[in-house]
Image 1 (cartoon, rainbow, N blue to C red):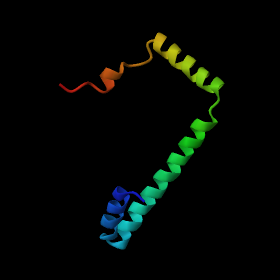
Image 2: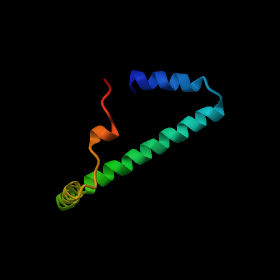
Image 3: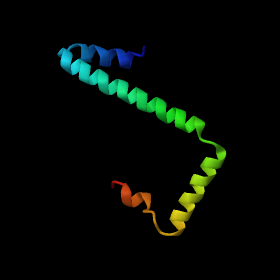
Amino acid sequence: MTELLQQAIAQIQKLPPDRQDAIAARFLAELQDEQKWETRFADTTDDQWDQMAAMVRQEIAGGETVPLDEVFPTQK
């Protein structure tokens, strides 16, 4: 176990049981979600990636996208 995880667990142990359970439930849900994404990415074929890339190119060409700088403007 990493030092950071040990620190987090030490802090969680100080909380009331219901808060500990709430955090544990969120943590387990996050782990499950991460595993689903890893599986989906691993199972994606080259043809599927190519198809997605073609769809994105078509959306860009059709003006259906917004530049990333408009979504996340740089801070000055």
